Image 1: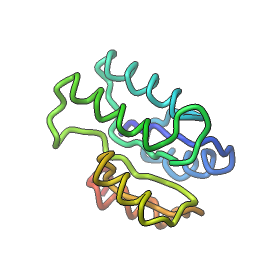
Image 2: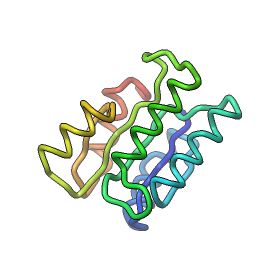
Image 3: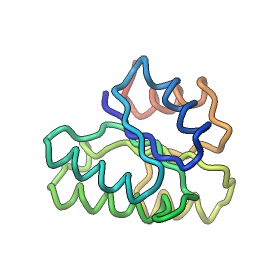
Image 4: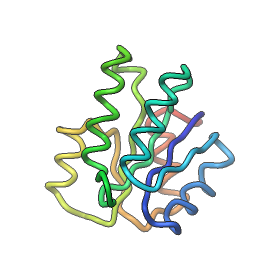
Length: 132
């Protein structure tokens, strides 16, 4: 599995990386702009991400806008909906509008409220079919 971890908080990035490292080759982006760049580069190389862990509140480009752009890149590359990256939104916001926007406008697969722990994250990754 190939994963992209996107978070402006060092502790959160590191925690998610430590949890996923036994299961995935992980790349890291510190904001939405870097995430979009990394996602496009991976698609250009023919090595798309299976999983994106995406914070919503970040500088430069926020998670909502990054998610919309990631889904647009997949459409540009004609990725079949079943083959799209699974996007787990990870955020401090326990906000119904943000959740609605991430799922229905952005195309998120799942949503976790921080702090993220190993059990919750791995359970979500399993539920989207990326690990057994």
